[in-house]
Image (cartoon, rainbow over all chains, first blue to last red; front, side, top):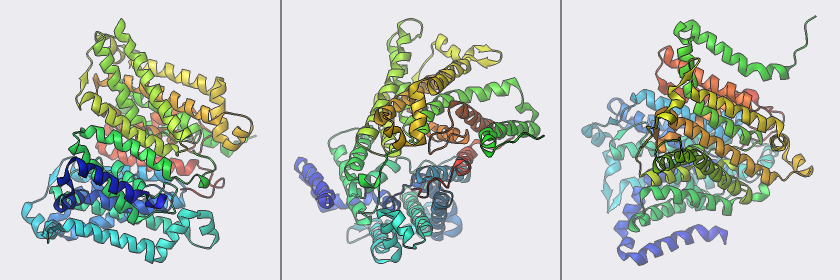
Length: 308
Length: 321
């Protein structure tokens, strides 16, 4: 039952909004809805891997902020290559979080908070604390392929689905993914089975950092610029997408496909709030409570003898 | 004969030596650093942060964490300003009710936080993070994103009136610190926080109502966040959602740098005082020697990682999530 809860929620949410306004269910509206949340979805996919192993990544938003700045700055130098370089920078920041967590035994919510602080400093330093703008011609030349449409489907959406497919492949078809599951289900057992758990945990954090950076790259291309605060407001909905999708905070079950559903739920809820004229500030309160509810209903309490 | 100094003693005094070392370091680089005027500047920036950090100290002593301070401060600051302006705009007379009003708001938010954490059995970092978001949203909803100005001269005297070079708010904060120390050292509740942090199952086995104590700790923390909010408003004369900004990272860094272990059970509010001073001396010193202030977030990040790394007894637990 619990396994089917996320997509049923999505369906119910769609129906409720569809009843109030049938135009909401038109294909082009739904496609628009989905492509709106592409950066958020990509960030949430990365975060899923970390939550899947029972950790948390609070640095995603700062890494994405940094990515918007670095992409904008490097565009004139590296062209489309700036996206790849920035993704690698995200990978490095994620790996740093993972290393601090596993090697130095700093809890992940603190280590990622700290690495996020470093990313924020880099963003502020590189941008000179200003909003930066991309040159329109360079942007079109380097990233134009991101912005078009094929058969009515925005390329952004296709890229997001491709990235989701990669994450899904890693999770279900590669050794790393199986080990992520082992770590999330029972870390002591994974250690006892001779798996080098530390290395795989670092990999999960690194991938999360990379996905956050890619989210930042796509966001900055969409908005044609970058600033150290551009991706502000991403963290809460990204965590909500993972949790509502059905990956519990304790890890081990759920995964990247769940987060696809979770991100769509977030998108529908957001859009329906516009339809129902609920102010944007109300959204944050609502999502905060949704997050608490999602955690409380999905968390596996048999894994926690003591709740700290 | 050389007296024997244990590793434990050294560890306890390290934060203080770090603080003294930093003061010497920045003084050597720029003699202007060592002046009453500059120390007053450090005190003003450290005062609201001290209240917030003292509040979260109680929670960390139990081995839990509270990440909701930015939301709680925002709501408490905004409610304080609204009540004050609604009741005549001066803290002398009825307007003074704004102060207990803000403290009640802080306590209520802390209680909700504690209840969600304990009753729903959600790890505190996630329960409090969610509620922090709710708080920020709530304060935006109340203000509509506007700033509320406070121009009551009596209230602003917290900043403008000085004794011995330091503004009144410094002394208020020191008084609150002593109260916090009293709670920590001389009340059953305070001692029980240490018991929970030292070993929750033992504490429960000896008959402590751990759930109730956890909620009490979050309530106390909420009250101190509200105190921090009031002092932050006194410093700037403005109450807005942004009032709470950055306090989460700064206050947790301060607590950890001061030597209170994240695992709970050791440290306390005096450690937090040292930690807040270390963080603010670094912040101020960096500006005094001419480094731009945006290096601070990165600096805090490195600081918190190294402090947690140095303070943890890594033999004690093998799995860190």
